[in-house]
Amino acid sequence: MRESPDSVFGRSPFADGSATTIFGHRQAAAVQVVGYETGVDGPAALLVAGDGTVSTETLEPGTALAYSLDERHCAGVVDDDSHTPCARDDAPYCDEHTYRWPCARCTGECSLPLDSCREEHAVYLAAFAPETFKVGVTRSWRLDRRLREQGADRAAHLRTVTDGRVARQIEAEIATDIGDRVPITTKVRSLHESVDGDAWHSLLAEFDPIETYDFDYGFALEDRPMAETLASGTVRGAQGRALLLDNAGSTYAVDMRDLVGYDVESGESDRNLQSSLGAF
Image (tube, rainbow, N blue to C red; front, side, top):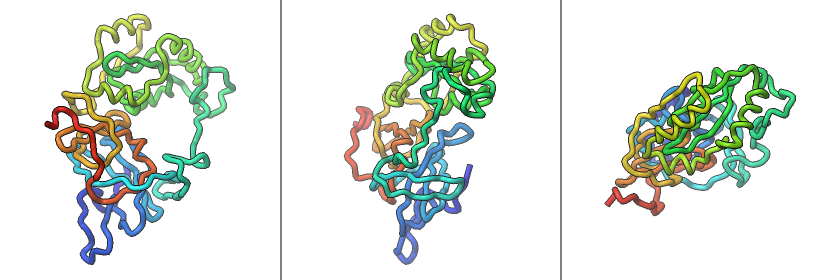
């Protein structure tokens, strides 16, 4: 994980008052959120760019954020530690900078167009509280990582097959009953809940899985978090791409993808945020 030379959070103005440092960059030019990491190998992180360079800023639990979101536009191109900006209005990416994964809607009727298609694949079930389930496929070596990237609460490895085409065919058959997509809005609504064990075990009884998983993301919520797009508050943790921030007595769930493309400025957000009942 890349480290920036300066701390991202709580950086004070320069002595001459000419500029501030934010995300390791002097804020004479715009600093933009250009990506994120879901925290599979450590804490979640934001990728931020300024003056053509990219820094990886970790979001450790307990980290205090105090940044406001300015204009949003295309996040451009990130290449290792360098960044090519784009001024087009479309966000997080304009058409020119949008990568369209050829396997996104594949059902196994293909000619194995990518080298990765010929690798061994796993077919899995993922569970999201309280009882939302989906089927998916990934290369076998990425299974644990893929489940954590999605923020799954529980999961089961159903089959191991020779290539992606066979995996997609099995996935398409199972998806007619279970589904193969869960929007992040559904995941966020239930971050404070647990998976219904009876429903999950009833589903697994139909498949005889190879292995099962039960994930812990290191935080507990008593109430449903409020869905917002902000970068102000204290980091509680992250589950998949949902970043949990405590702010003024309420807990907010931020889809990190919704931050990509924003120029950021030092200072608390001045937005009027909806508060949970626990804030009063």
